Image (cartoon, rainbow, N blue to C red; front, side, top):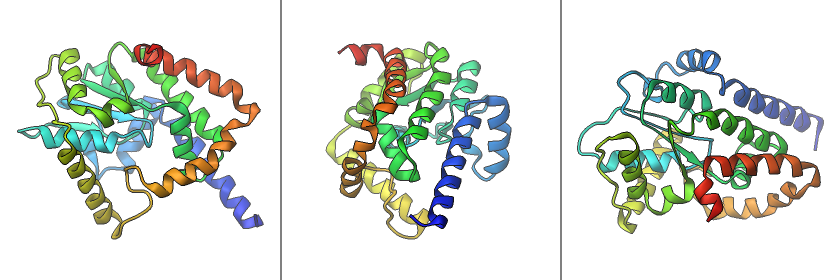
Length: 244
């Protein structure tokens, strides 16, 4: 690795760490984010927001929000894709129906290592920090595993309705509808970047191969305590899933 590469890696890691330190604090993150993303007001929860869909980055929120919107027969005001614990905290305090997608910490860490080109420690620490700030609000939101989103999102919508007394239309999780969501995701990626990219928000064979190659970095014994902390938080957020 050249000196330039090392400097770039250090800057990249610092930026990543800063993002996931700031975005757990509502009083700091929300005003800054509204300023930075003034052209994307739909991302942020408001008093008339009907549903918030959030998750740590690379946790399936793109599939969830597209599937949800495809199923509805009317426009529903949603807030999504900040990937910030601060948004979940604000929504929970407001009493807004909120779906929090929880991805296994090891899988999420690997995804962030690859997407952000960072080592495992900052990614794992960020997963822990994010979900530790969500944990006190677990009784005010609906936490669901990524596996449920990807296998039967209709059941997830049903759980939202049961939990919050809403009447959203359920997504029919057929192979045809799932393929349509992936087509929409790829079209969105093409519109955003002008071409198909490696970072399309859906599983790809090349990313799976890279995960296998980098998974060994997570086996470092020095990460044992962090992995234990992440597992404890994961069990607290999804006790039924963790015990099954």
